[in-house]
Image (cartoon, rainbow, N blue to C red; front, side, top):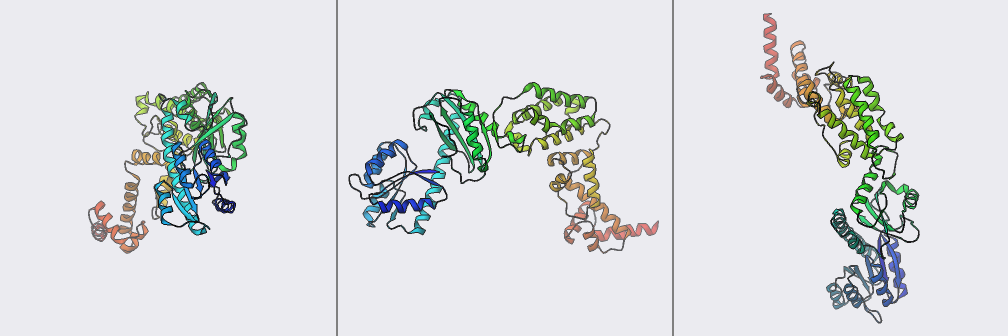
Length: 482
């Protein structure tokens, strides 16, 4: 929500602008409306609003002078001039001083709403660019964070800092009224995407309890949120930013969790859990392995573990299997990941645990080159439904196999990609029908899952070396000789 100051020496004009802004779906918040230009200048310099709506002709200080004095104070607010004068010289002068738009009184509602939409888009682009640059600067540990933050905070800084990363359900959110932090507290909000906002909170004490209760009160607006620990001074701000983002992804473990406070990873518990998996794997106890991995999510939730612990477990398994050259050589797509990569690769911890079991059970010595049961079921399904339009993604979802692992299984078990396997299967079925039935070639084409007769002929010739009609004739001649 962008902060607005309105100044006009005519009270009825203030009412008209206020009503216009109230129609803007909570995009703008009026922090001051006044008929006194001197008061407006004082508020602008102190509060640094995003937008100023001003009349161009006012006593004491004109709208042009207000813009000039504001710029001289280093305040980069956007100005919208609203005036009863349509002379070109007024418009030209306002634009020369950097006004974004010039509207005539009384306001034309259609034109005014178009202006507000344009203003909002400009402010969004301006803010996201500036906020992203500021965020990147804060991540550099060598920077003077205290000096950087003074440009964003409205009051002298307090001793403690804390960061909250929030992902909103909608891009139309109000980052001003989200927190109720009591006295001796202030914050600045950095918009890093349509629905992502990072709040840097500066206060005299740890505000975790108040932050949590504020977020809980607005939980219906949130997709997820992460709260960092608090720290004295701004020196640890880069760490606070990172840990807040990590905490906001703890819903990876517990999908019902919306708000999470950062906790340091529990290396001891994670290592113990990894050792159980390794022991079951080394003893070829694959039923036990299934039980351990199936209980992974419950174990994590019961012990209040987060995504950082999931990353630790994954990387521990990668290192243990890579240390065993015999087993490690059988694993593809099994590499060290960070928490961002884990989120990209898996939907949640449940899918990670399933993938881990499938990947590790593929190494089962009693079934060299064979697939796990789910993959066997998938292959059986393709043999029963080869005449239908089949897609690997849908098949992997149907049989609860990660799609990348499914690709790997096709290569290792069948020696072919999924596409090659389906083509081979359909060509074999087509050969059977051409040899043992009186179906027309067009009917054979449809029976093995091809809708395009000419494409079927092309694929058949590429794989069998001749057309379907020639194959039928040749195989018929051979049968007659026999």
